[in-house]
Image 1 (tube, rainbow, N blue to C red):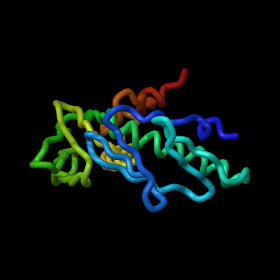
Image 2: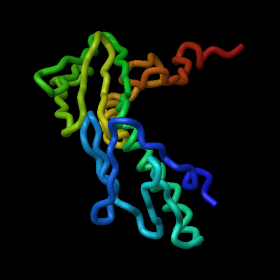
Image 3: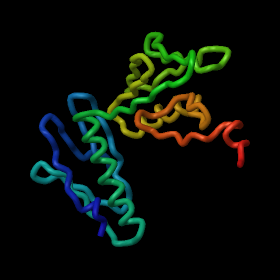
Image 4: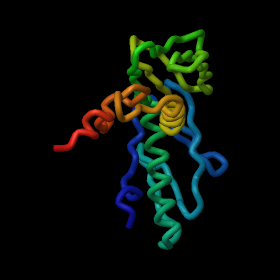
Length: 181
């Protein structure tokens, strides 16, 4: 039994869910999401809840059961409250700014790096923090990871782009590492 798959998803107020052509179409105030139903999984809408069941008890059936429930829950949560990731820039002369919808980063290269966010993703900048938000959990995480990958935090001084709350293990420099008694 899938511990995640057997839990029903309650449909909050303001959200409508319907089955169309092998997919769940979820509509809310913030937009619309479509989750394709995976093979070996049945889904039904009863009493304001979405219920998933496995068609067979094979390993693939159980895996798809839990995955289908998690993807649908993320879509419902995204349409009700949305998702966000906050990145922090640390380093002398490193800064971020918005040019229309595009993000311009000055992170130590000879030119500013420009990033155009995909549809459904909003980027805002406050001092040294970049906030990536949207209704698709995967897309928000992917855009944040792409921004972080431009200048990962280095272990000696900690300069670079990191997630808020991320801990960077610092290494000792040459002076400390070379002194032995």
